[in-house]
Picture 1 (tube, helix red, strand yellow):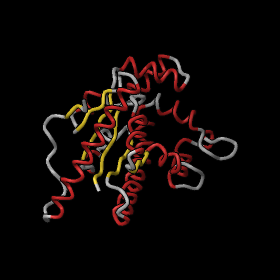
Picture 2: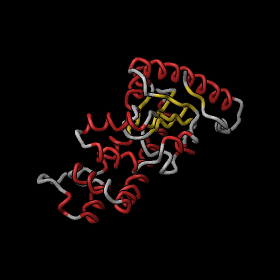
Picture 3: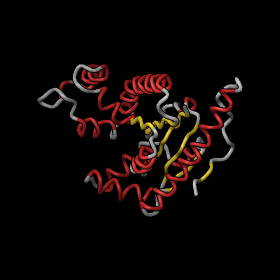
Picture 4: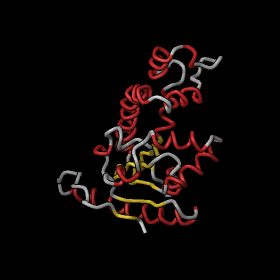
Length: 225
């Protein structure tokens, strides 16, 4: 099975690309969904978050008040780093478990890890291929304001809390530019799927010959166009 990191800044369109890949029966492992599960009451991340941020971070039903948590971590680099230190190792372990299970079952050719912070967290080397989804920051701002119903200043604060797209791109094997129409983005994702399928076949051929399944990354990322 080919393991692929699908990453990019907030509101760059990762979920749009992931949906196209899911339609082609790629397995989509969403870091956001896993993290949300990890902070449910009684889960490993929940107790550490409550111990650190205090009971005021909880809703009346004892679930984590995610909007409040978001305000805190996007306003404080130290708090954001703390949360990442808590959740990132747990999310990575869940990814590894999912990959091992799927490889045993043999049901999927391509495993997609959809996560915004793959590069920042140092997880990129764990994957066969890295896909970076990107668009100009002004487009990110507009999308964030509409999606989250926040001010322009708040949108910029969220964007600035993450690594710039130019820095992520240096780790990429494939690039998806989502600054165009949804149809144009979907067309790029279709071409990406065909490329990943070819990569899967190459990996399988290498493994059949008894060679290591990994390979050196290309020196320059390839735009899917």
